[in-house]
Length: 155
Image (cartoon, rainbow, N blue to C red; front, side):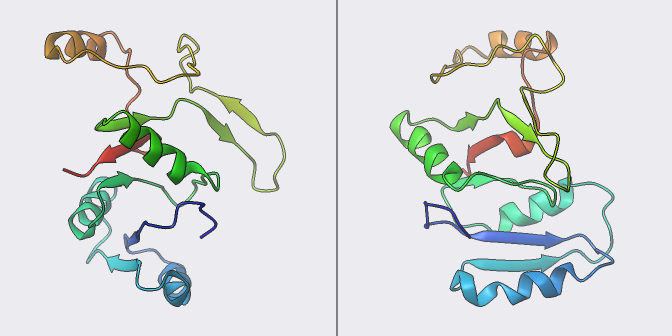
């Protein structure tokens, strides 16, 4: 709700949670002025794939960002990601840095993931259009693939 970018929708797919998550989500509906959608699976899927796919089907935006229930983003994140995507006309903006914080707010860790060989960059970098080169990088483990680190063109 505190994003500096305000042209976004929030889609929450409840995968049969056992707590009051759906009621909490519904309590925010009015604050989002019609930009909040709550959907529920019929049975627990056991992974995030089905709920993410359901969310994609319900989405209308040009880009997608996936957040899990334990994820937070900075107030400027959507604005920054959207600006980069538009400025460079790219299909994917990948976020390398992440921050881990305990529930009590202590022991903050900033890093680039488990792979210590990943070099953080300060300016946008671009990948080759050559599919063979990209596949080779996948085989070599050069790409990190978690959905929650990407801002992706929906099309």
